[in-house]
Image 1 (cartoon, chains in turn green, brown):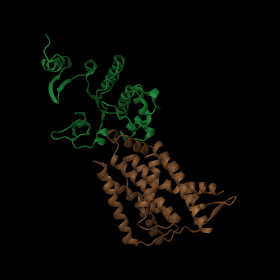
Image 2: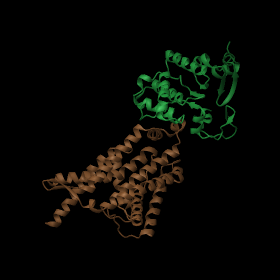
Image 3: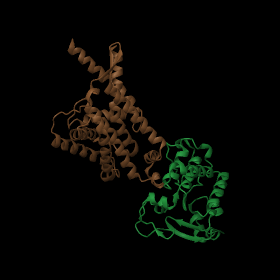
Image 4: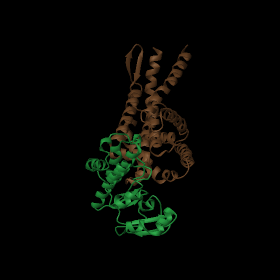
Length: 196
Length: 265
């Protein structure tokens, strides 16, 4: 689904709209300029470049600015993702946690209005998940729309306004998070039975 | 002092080979494309220079001001209109396309210029040399070739590591889909890379045309020089091909000096 929204895959049928504008046939690189940012489930940093250069690429090309004008935005994105101390580290040598942080920082550097997060909390410790929840809450409060695919339900419930449960591409149930999580369809799908 | 001379002349000749290798290395580094027409495109640059020199009656080195932008545009359009379409799918597509291009260029040049050997006359600099003492001398033109080769590599390195566009080259090289996600147009980047690579290899072609003679059919031999330096120096590396080209040129110079010694005895 995220690949369809950000343009990595083409649709067989249907349409995609962003803030009322149809983007079904808009190339992937232009969708970035329109404000769609994403992170990958398996991080894909530009491994031969430093952490700062990775983010700078997002800040310059993602927004169509010069490097000088993008410098401050890149530093802010790194700070927000907690990666500023590692700015000069080569991305290929980062740990999994830092790679996930870099994914977020690089997406934030493109200044998205719609942020697509793909299992960004996977593999993090409890404390790290709490940090991430804080970051995502602050993004939401700034007006960034977020679509977040996640298996760590605690993190989702702490942030989201609307929850969709999908089973093998089929929508099971959608709505208020507390109601969705308690719905019989979700319990049957995840637990194999209804709660006794 | 023979061996000292061999080392010096080898390093100087390595400058020319490094120019051949740098363009090939850039294209492979950015888009993983092996350009089998690389040598023929360098010969095309030499013939373009020959035509311009004939029309404008200027020194071949001065004609580079026009030749290089022309070849850059040819490279950009070649990538944009043809080679970009071969990058999707298996690795055989670009190999076959550039092999076909090599055949077309060679035969096109044969039709246009015949199989006669040609040369570019750069005037006094071709034969002038700088004496180092002890029977050693360095030709001004080989020295110029080496300096230009080093300058090209330094400038290319600076471009790749310090500029906005250079970072886009490296990002696209690392992961083209992630680069698109960052708003980079990879087709444009590939075309720019090919334009720059062909500009560099055209420079090599013109320098080779001043140093020795050339015919429409010698492109594949130039490709072999570039391949050897690039494969041994590291695909996508900047300085590796130059180091290998210099080392690799020594035995050639040694063989050449031994042959001359044999002929004179």
